[in-house]
Image (cartoon, rainbow, N blue to C red):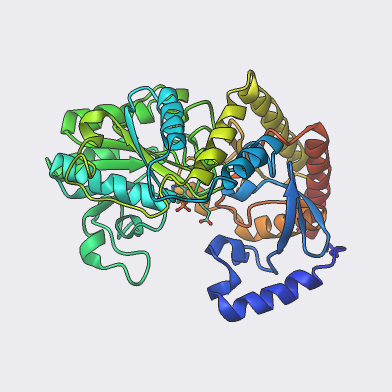
Length: 439
Ligand code: KE4
């Protein structure tokens, strides 16, 4: 057994207080540690790749706010940019040149995307893009992949139903079946199921929505040919291909997964990194589609704080830093070091572990048998989540802050240096050996 050494007294009392006034004491469910148990750490401050909780415990951070902080916490240039913008006011409810500058920068990185609309979250981006896809095609049905997450959009909060291809049943109370009955769920990495959906619902499918690299069931890369296959099936059937790049946009390379795999979607959702840590979402597409969006077209969508100057300045500063030479090569190198080190540490203690990685997105899966490939939702959900929880808490106590769920992706930033990786790997070695002894 492992005996925790760190005090969590302040977080415990803060959590008790928070639970009195906020559901689960949090502003977003995953933060409540429900998947791993224990008390969520209340964070006081952060710098670079390290965060400090209100008990004074410092951690190497692999959550990175679930993706936005690819250049680390409180990066000087980002803080300077926000501070400068702050001095000129927070929001005007009017167009600013910073929106145009960020729009131009993002579109220049995404061949095929000609126009963009800023919103305030990834959910809003997905919701708006779905509406646009239905309006543009005049069709109602949506196809999504089981295990892919696109924010808490009613139409996409869908169980797989009795099996893939059935029209969706709601995965949350409060979502009417009338909404989810227009959503078809298929398995990620299965072109056959998409083909069957188009056969079963000819000329009725408005779009296929997919995370080009699935990051919300843990990290599952697309199999060779999968994204290209989606592209041609959508072309053959007059449906739009929607890439939800809220997580992968500017994460896996400059631009995103569509650049990495050279597959052009019809619509792209973005978020996280393009706001650099302030609330930003966006959806982009070719002019012929985006011109349909109000006020240039009839598809209504609006937002009080959309494109606000603080978030624009934060996004611009973050993307500027990512444009620096060899930035992604450095991320690639340090992330590969982490991934290989985790696999070696697990092997040393004979703990079965499959480590998936794309760029600076890493995910160790606690598989039941060594060598098991994790390629879709059923593979991911067959993992030993209890063992993950034990690993999570030992790492936390040893000063490594991981996403509190087997089904989240770890994020490496440009602020993670050799020392941080070495510290992480020695903690992992210790954690795996404790787990192996507990067996
Ligand atoms: P937001 O509405 O949370 O900004 O974005 C929703 C969203 C859309 N699309 C993808 C691919 C996403 O990963 C997300 C949000 N990701 C989760 C992490 N798994 C955010 C963390 C949370 O929900 O607190």
